[in-house]
Length: 166
Image 1 (tube, rainbow, N blue to C red):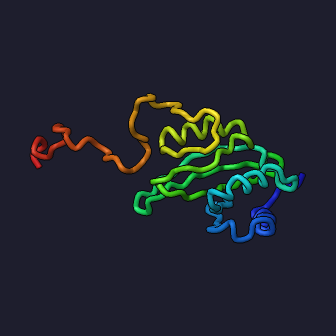
Image 2 (image 1 turned 30 degrees about the vertical axis):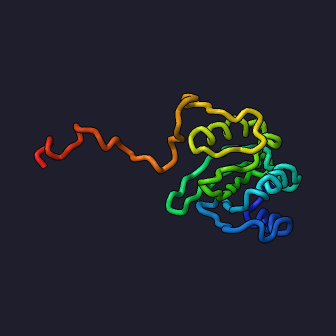
Image 3 (image 1 turned 90 degrees about the vertical axis):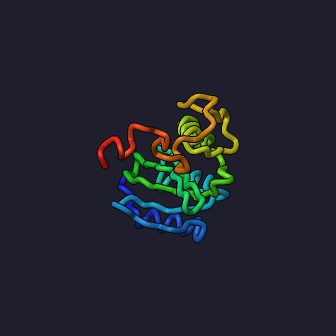
């Protein structure tokens, strides 16, 4: 099978989704685009089930916190082993309502990836079969990868300048 190109993929996605996909870029040759949370499952399903591209491997699901915009970006990385092409899909959601549909019906591997994203960022995947913490303690009251917490404890006395002659 011939390798697919980003141009072919952009054309195919444009025919099927049009303006539902936006912010299309190619940083370092990796096709990246955004969509909305109500369209993401349709886009992911199309990418997986279309015979022309066959994105059969879910590489990763993660999130990025943008506190200055009050948003979280849920990021999906897909790989077509058959066509030798990768793609990144971003979905921006508000940090006060961090919900998005689950991708578990499409890829079983999404189960643990979504649990990890929930654990660290607090993103709730609607329809997930077992959404609970995977790495942190169950009674941990925070999501540690959110950028709303200080990097260091402000009460530490061993970091005060006066102890170092400053």
